[in-house]
Amino acid sequence: MGGEKYNLEDDGFDGFGVQLRIIKSRTNQAGQPISMIYDKVHGLDSLRSSVRYCKDMGLLGGNRNGYYINGDKDHKFTLTGMNREFREDKSMYKILYSAITPLLESRLSSVSVDEMEVSEEEFDY
Image (cartoon, rainbow, N blue to C red; front, side, top):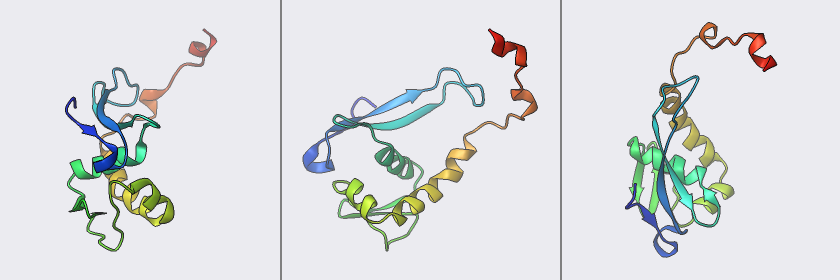
């Protein structure tokens, strides 16, 4: 994601896109990439990263003047004011996360509880 850069004037923050790759996971497939957005002032930005995921999955509509999620044109936001607009209208978080949670859950493996069992003796060391 080397060319993905954000600036204060156009995007409301200075930052860039990063791609995390989980090397080892007990409950999921190792090596799955996770695209995130890094804000140079606040660090990894979960809200912007979640909206980015919406865009990647085709759930984000609109344009720079007003984006909306999953066809809900009554709840629009801009990239420059995203954090403020979500704080002012908390229902937007519900709209966002109800749209992406099923997609994120589908990325999890189907490991049974029996396969995840850890012997109590392993905790002694």
